[in-house]
Image 1 (cartoon, rainbow, N blue to C red):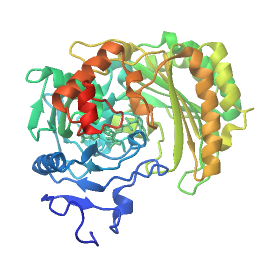
Image 2: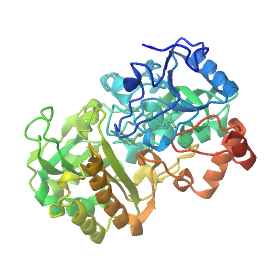
Image 3: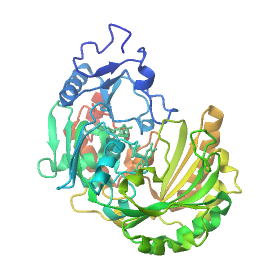
Image 4: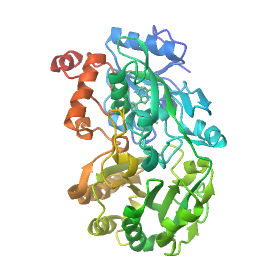
Length: 466
Ligand SMILES: Cc1cc2nc3c(=O)[nH]c(=O)nc-3n(C[C@H](O)[C@H](O)[C@H](O)COP(=O)(O)OP(=O)(O)OC[C@H]3O[C@@H](n4cnc5c(N)ncnc54)[C@H](O)[C@@H]3O)c2cc1C
């Protein structure tokens, strides 16, 4: 509810909402998933539908205000300063439909994965969502999207079949490989730099059941468990995705026993196949004797709970690198920083290693700007940090992890980068040049600010926008 009058955008005539920093509902409206991030745009704007989006784009362009498109604010950190900018959050545009015959889904661009995964699972289908179904489909899909089935089916962005958006000229466009191949290419990896996406269509996959679960070992056994997992990686088929975590569960009442306040090293996985084969592939890990073993044949809905990601916003700092290979020496170095002897339990809440390769390394025909991800393993670390002292402690520990990774670093996955960054480093030179050319073609005045920013190719256009 707005409590002030004569606000700057009072003549913006939309069915949706405009929320200002002075409004009583500002706190909820501008909340990011990391509560450390305080996004401060001129206003948060929530369109009700695609017509509203057209009105907003025309209004902003005519009034010299920039637009940062957003779905859920799960990756608001990289946006940085938002002066003379409105955040247009499409979270109220969250309708969806599933075509179980064609294996296609259409969603409004503000929807979260959790809204569609139960229906998909009930129909024997799985989408390529990641660890947390609380994440928005839009940002996840436009930036890449690397989840449990990624070694088999690749990045979610390359399962996208159509994107509807409003571009800087106020045009509503339905973009596919056939009618606007260049823009379709740029959107699938280039994120929110080209317009406000209103709807996305994508392929989903027939999965009645899969062999999935987690093996929990005492934190003290991190070295033997992680080395065993690491040695097995080259033997795993594309049908098996495994992640290895060190996880320090917070001592909070909402965390169930026996996990509350406990620390574990966990090998989790999802195998598109039968239990007998899955057990065979993971036998060496299981032979180590897990304290808890949840692996079973399960419907795909269970994948949403597997990683035990926090469902609610929290204050955290994170770091990430893609590693060309995870050698024995590097594993030992990383364990010195986050292993049992390191005292890391008060800083790095989650240390996550994801097996890459398979379809993630193969460029599929017609892929977008984010065609593949490099490396054998993705490293992601996160620490809950409620105050400045904790932020410093977490950042220090994560900086050490990142430094240890440097000699083996082969890049970064932009969706895992949670702070302002030079987006050119996420792409090879040819892809970056083409993205900038597409930005100049569709948004020469630089109206849209994606979380990872792509400037238009011509320097003159950048000067005009500044
Ligand atoms: C708990 C958690 C778990 C995660 N797990 C995974 C995982 O397993 N795999 C993985 O790949 N990623 C994962 N991520 C990262 C996730 O993919 C990114 O944070 C992603 O950007 C989130 O998308 P969003 O739409 O929810 O976020 P938002 O912050 O709303 O959007 C991020 C960016 O996407 C673009 N965008 C969003 N909506 C629109 C729109 N309507 N129009 C145009 N552009 C738009 C904008 O550039 C925006 O800045 C995780 C993140 C969190 C917080």
